[in-house]
Amino acid sequence: MGNRYTALVKGSSAVFPRGFGWLIPVWYAAIVLVVKIKVKPASWFTWYAPYAFGITVLATLTLIIVLSTMRNNAFVADESGILLGLRGAARRRFSRRRRQTTHLPWTEVQELKIASRPYGARVEIVLHRDSVADSHDLIWQAVATVVTLLIPIAYLFRSPGLIRPRSYNPPRYRIQLYVRAEELRLGLAPLAPPTVPINVRRTWRARALGALRRSRLATAA
Image (cartoon, rainbow, N blue to C red; front, side, top):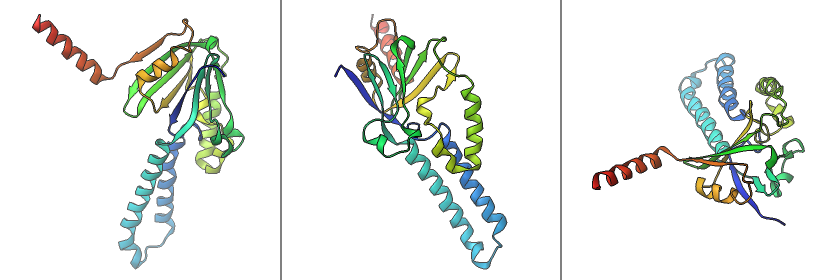
């Protein structure tokens, strides 16, 4: 087996369709609205309503936090390219649709952009404009999102957001990883060909410290 680099993907994009987390508050709000309209106010409901509302808000926040902090083994790079999608034991826990993967050969990759984040790093994979990518997929995603909003169980029949491009001009993927930006750069550098630049964008804190260090050196000189 050749050299390869693996990292854990942050969030639910490796399992659920893109935008799934934003639908959760809408569903809970709809539940609250239905209860408020359909349930006739009783003597007990007057004092219980604030507590029920608070519990609903807490449940919403808890579910969003759990989904946003998930860790999935769904990013691997080797000498042939980058593979996005669930791997190993994680694949056996979900349906066939959510076991799909996307392979991005290095020949199709134009650039890698890495940015530091509080949780680790975010990598943006930019493909060449002539890479194979169906721009009509954006229309399908919009329709599928509406269907999922109306019929929540429909998410079982949709592909994970991780394996779909976020934009198509040019095609690009954006992945959140539980790994430091510099470590990610060092891990991908030996695998990516020289024609694929790896750009690391420093955080505002690092830039501020660098400017302060340069100003001190200039003052001392």
